[in-house]
Length: 121
Length: 111
Image (cartoon, rainbow over all chains, first blue to last red; front, side, top):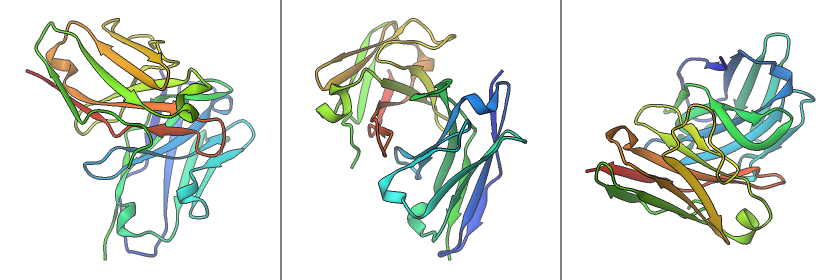
């Protein structure tokens, strides 16, 4: 079965960077894209970006352009999300989520369990 | 402010049907039929229940159905059950840059 297992919770100071990992199993990693979505405490979902595990193409939310970088390591079936210049507004649960269909980025299917990133001085 | 507009809350009694609306612009819904709905229980990750307006993934109850008319998409849950109490989010695909936009979420209470 498809599984996305994310790295553990992080506590960061303002101005620092964070890198969250998402290890995939149960499917052919390089045939699906991975999205990253975050959810601030008590708030809704916010799409951050998408990366093709096939060719590394990326799309980023305009709001986060320049601060977020998505990468993949096909040898370990792992996706990464790095966010720099953190502020308290970046405190959220960060989810990785696989495209529902292979070679198609039109819907998000399976989700990881989420990683809480807390930013506080 | 979310790109898609949903009611903050809806409620219904067991066995009843409820509908959650999701309103966007022609940029969100006009060109594509790529509307999705997610269910999220407290402290859990979202779960896809509808994609492509009205396509249910394997294992999702047929009590969930979706539709779209113009710039409004809708999720209907029939035969409400206590386990349906959760937050529901709509989402639409956009072809470039910001691939997905979400609604602000709707809290469903089963009375």
